[in-house]
Length: 223
Image (cartoon, rainbow, N blue to C red; front, side):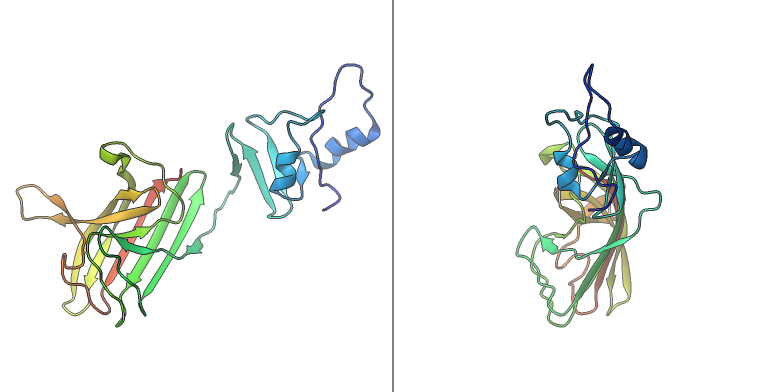
């Protein structure tokens, strides 16, 4: 714990003596400094401590992060958020596919509740394609939408499925949540008078095989 770290955020009562030590806590830090989030959470609301409320700031030594309290949770202050890696999970609404020796990589960046993500799935020779409509897991839990099942269009994503053997490129949408942690892909079907949306599945828009890929990127609101 560093020289500026606090274990409480004191509050004063009428007639209480204000000591030099009390003043030094405020003068030296400006924003209260804590060893970690556990120390931060323990510093508010106890006897003689400040009540935690919207607008409170804190600095954590463990992560070198400045945070603010929005009335319900602590939020990070980041002027320039950085991209981070995550490992998506490939799933379906039927028999689960298996990645085998394929590759599946993802990256994301989050600023406040706005999450932007990218993911690329490439099938290998030992990948199995399963059955049902495909989905990928999200890096951060999403806010549920409205409509039937509460899962309508809370992700705004687009991408491509690529048939490596035939050189076919198919535009897809990613906008339906199977849950708050995974997003389903949909094709644009141009066979009708107006474009409609169809599912991306083990045999749609082609039968998936070695070296075929799904590329997706999008944004959504974190829960």
